[in-house]
Each structure stands twice: as structure tokens, then as C-alpha cells.
Image 1 (cartoon, one colour):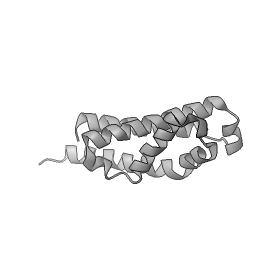
Image 2 (tube, helix red, strand yellow):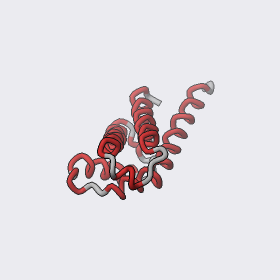
Image 3 (cartoon, helix red, strand yellow):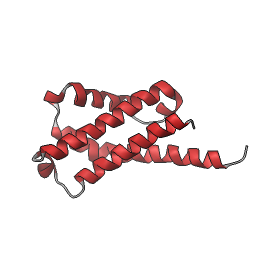
Image 4 (cartoon, helix red, strand yellow):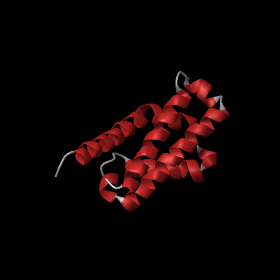
Length: 121
């Protein structure tokens, strides 16, 4: 895997792990009541979406392996451009229902690449 592509995948992984750290132990009610945490989570989702946009440009074959990648980019666009219509419940749902799957796929892509890179050809 090219260094640039691996870097984008690591950016996605790091941003997702940060989101999980930011909301660890929180309820939806405490999340919605804390504008600092909401802003931090939304920013990390924006980073994930932007990394996917760049991944689509540099490695469409990798982008295609990420389930719901287009929806994630769309979600990023809502967060970045539709800030006034962001639904905290939808963000919370994305954190708990969709983010774990995304991170699993990204970890798998990175691990498979590391395994491939180590094997002789």
C-alpha cells in the first residue's frame, strides 16, 4: 500500500479512536449538554470524511472496500456545511452503531497491508 493511502487510513483510525475516547462513559444526555465534546466529535467525523474523499481520489479500489463510504462523506458534508441542522441524536447513533464497523474495516485494511508487505513475493 502506498504511504499516502496508509496515512489516510491511519487518519481515519486515529480520528475514530479519538471520538470513542471523547464519548467514553457518556450518555446521550451528557453528550448533548456538552458543546465542547459535541464540537470535538463533529470535527473528528469531518476528518474521517475528508480522509475518505482523498482516499477515493488516490485509491478508489481501497475506498470501494469501505462499507457506506459515500454515506460517511455525505455525513461529513452535513457536519461541515449544514452545521445549523446537525442532529445530535444522529451523530450519537453514528458513534455507536456505525463507527465501530468503520474502524474494524480500516484496521483490517491496514493489517492486511502489513501482512502483505512482510511476505516475500
